[in-house]
Amino acid sequence: MSEPETGVAPEATPFLRVVRGDPTPQELAALVAVLASSSAPAPAARPVPVWNTPARMHRHVLPHGPGGWRSSALPR
Image (cartoon, rainbow, N blue to C red; front, side):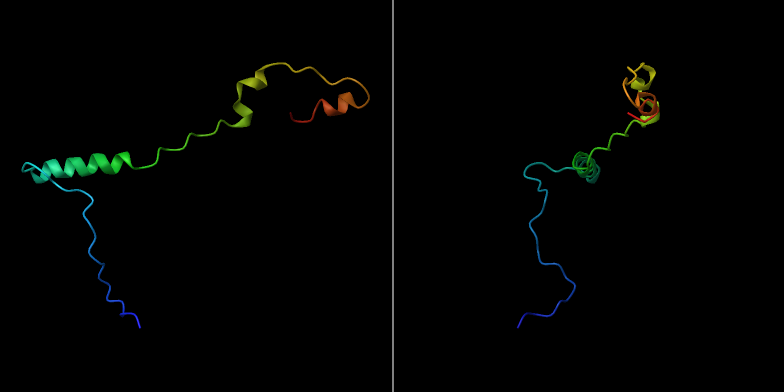
């Protein structure tokens, strides 16, 4: 049988380790902040609404032939 869950996480290897020197707590906090911000996903680009696209300012060739006047009002 497996051991019951005690709510204590098993020991993990540290993500960051100081190899040389004696950094201050402020220096370590700055380093952690830089690393944390670099791993955040970039904000998604906002989509341009269809009603505001510059292509709507251009004139379109109207369809010709039977039913052309009817299809001229349909969205492209």
